[in-house]
Amino acid sequence: MPRPVRLTLLLLAVLAIAAALWWQLGRPHAQRALVLYGNIDLRQIDLPFNDSERVAAVLVQEGDHVRAGQLLARLDTSRLAPQVAKAQAQVAAQQQVLLRLQRGNRPEEIAEARANVTMATADAGNAQAQYQRMQSLAERSSGRAVSRQDLDAAKDAADAAQARLTQTQKALALEQIGPRREDIAQAEAQLQADEADLALAQQNLANAELHAPLDTVVRARLTEPGDMSSPQQSAFTLAIIDPKWVRAYVDEIDLGRIREGLCARVTVDSFPTRSFNGWVGFISPLSEFTPKNVETTQLRSSLVYEVHVFVDDPQDLLRLGMPATVQVLDSDTTQPEDPPKAAAADSADSKTSQARRCGQTAHEPHEH
Image 1 (cartoon, one colour):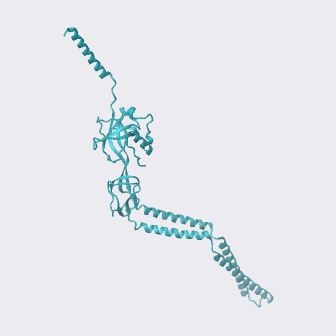
Image 2: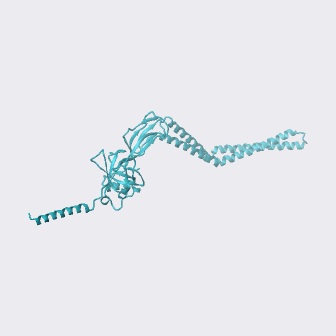
Image 3: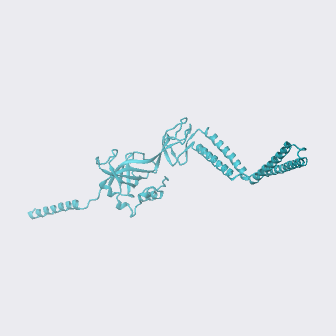
């Protein structure tokens, strides 16, 4: 081959290599995906009885899915039921006392008081007339027909009869007026106190049944029939399975690449061929040093920010504490112009719309 041709081919080869290097090194590189590492987290409830009684029955096992309001366990009510019956009787008795005071005196009682006044009036008139006669006789006989002692006795009898008349007149007036307002107020207050005692007894009886506060899973059964319950000792530990999230940490240098509302993909070692869709729901405003139980690609102490990536897990496959890997998806291709705010991340409507937007199978989350 002639030398000029060889030189030309060599020059073209050099130019091709230079062009390839320029294209490879000079073109903008795609930014690596943000990957976070953390553990599955969820909320738990320690559920004790409110009173100290003997446990009569435990109706659920560990791992059972329970609905809100479902009966979990029951205490012995042999002491509580009679307390309710006694309080009900006290309320009924006080209601009758108050009713009697509000209705006032019966017509028969007023008629009896009026008859007493009539009889006392007659007695007072007779006694006064007897005294006047004896006084007149004493004056005409200059004290010889009637002794001073008999005259004083007649006067005392007249005064006593008049006093009895006054007493019966006052009694008739009281019968006609009826009970005092203060007595009625006292009876009403006593009835309220008895009703409060009844409500407390009924609440204590209701507290003998332990119900699930939310849709949960029984994580631990900590009491058995025959045990003595206590408000300081949990009977069950319940796990709230919705929402679930990955508690992860982002380095300070990557903080600008993540925000609330970004979609994410979550994987766990237990299901290597499956991914779970999620979204960033919380970024801590405070920095901290890397926790010892968090494994990152660079095991070193550095300032990080706690991140909660909520996960859609309708089949309840993820368990508390599972190591998880989170890949935060590119915001330029997956996010709308106005992502939901973290303040609304816990509302049902926000979660449903977020699930649909991030490609999840939307389901209605439970209210918390």
